[in-house]
Image (cartoon, rainbow, N blue to C red; front, top):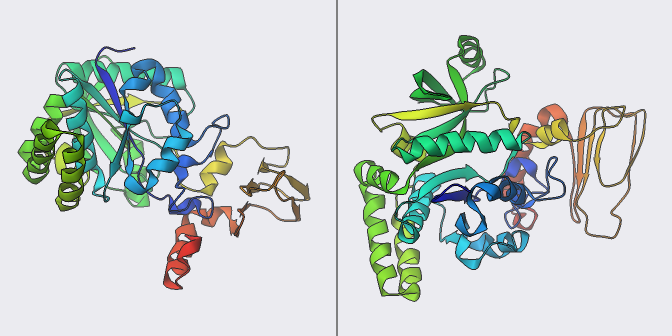
Length: 364
């Protein structure tokens, strides 16, 4: 384990592109998507970093309404590990709040912030990257991990790299929003850009100082919560519920990282995937000789390159029989069946919006 290292795992969001498996009460981080050995995505994230920080130094930041479900899938974590945001306020407020609590527990804390719903194939390599990033954070740097691109991806943000600052480290020049196709192709061709994976590493006191400098309203709100914590847990909970909804809703990228004087990047190639759609679940899954990936029971005849995913609760699930179909995602739950071409899986959120429009909120 790395001395004074703590982790904040961001576990909010709904993952609408994984509907109907992902619902408001069961977002995608609580699902066993991808090759996780049966673990949920958030469970796999915890296991990746457990050797680095230990269970007692992991904080799960999620919505207050998701606390019970999140605790159920992470039974080994202590009660003190779970923070429930009263309302969503984007990543800056969430990270600042979690960092403030960690700093209260350990004034010398080094903090890593990780999404809860990504897949990493090379776990040993990822742990080495974490070590490099935390070493840089220990000397006071603000650090992010950038994924070396394997294609011209328009669905990710990018980070522009500068000169080397040490072994395995580069200066960060700028954050770039999701580009169009020609721009993405130019980024990859140049070799000067990496994907922004939403991972951040810093000394807790350094980040809190930057929050105070660039986002004073958040800093002032946290100060109010800290004063209440000095009175007692009940008072802290009361003030958190009152103050948190008043905080600005802004991402840590825009609110802090794009404004700091300097930041550093660890470029990494660790088999990282942002599980963003059923297409990505198919890509990562084991497949038969016809390219079909099955989670549950399926019988196929002349069917190729399909994903069959069963989340029904009955013993053994429902059998899916597929004849002469190709390149589909077929997902079933107790109350819903989704059939969508794999190439359109990014558009599943359109169904969620249509359900909302029709007032079918019990299906969302």
